[in-house]
Amino acid sequence: MNAIVLAGGPPDAVSALQPDAPNKAFVRIGDCALVERVLLALRATPEIERILVVAPPSSHGDAALTLADECRADGTRIRDSLRSGLRDLAPGALALISTSDLPLLTPAAVSDFIARATDAGGDIGYGCVEQRVHLAAFPQVPHTWARLREGTYCGGGLVTIRPRVLPALEQFIEALGAARKKPWRLASLFGVRVLAKYALGRLTITDAEERARQLLGAPVRAVPSPYAETAVNVDRVTDVALAQRLVAGRS
Image (cartoon, rainbow, N blue to C red; front, side, top):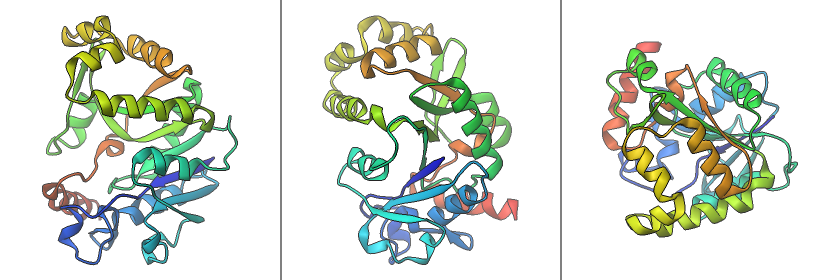
């Protein structure tokens, strides 16, 4: 399987903590950069054959990217970076997408996710972690949670995708961006029934998968992971110190 690591984007408040970092992916946590930690986990995963990193062109010679088989230019928007990473890959072959800010990612977690996503059989496998799983491992790490009938979940940093679905996904991302903070547009995009069931805590995973299939014209599957580290990421400045402590605790 090919793995694409999304390490693009401009400098932000996190990367400002390390003046030489092109963006947050290159901020050092312990003895190596965030993106390098992800690459180390992927390189040790038996199911991964090739690793592509999508990052700013100025960073392609950085030592943190040594384990990548190929570096590709990022884009202004995430959909541009996805297109860059998935370019020339077999349309129907499942590829792994990983964010670059998962400081605790392990080969075991990656292998388990690939197995579950493959068994699920969708064109997109969306990684998530159930709240009880997360709190048992990392109660100190905050998340934004979504309450469904089966449980409460947060999004993870791993996704699988068949490149053939990318055009429809790009259109959905664009529509979602246009609808952001506009309730009537969100209602028209997701459907009033879906939003109402979610608000009442009655939306099921199957409901969400079916609506995603209708929107994208392709099967989409939720992939709950028993490995909480797949959802421990670095989004805020305060996350950096927390990640440092968690990494130090594992060494």
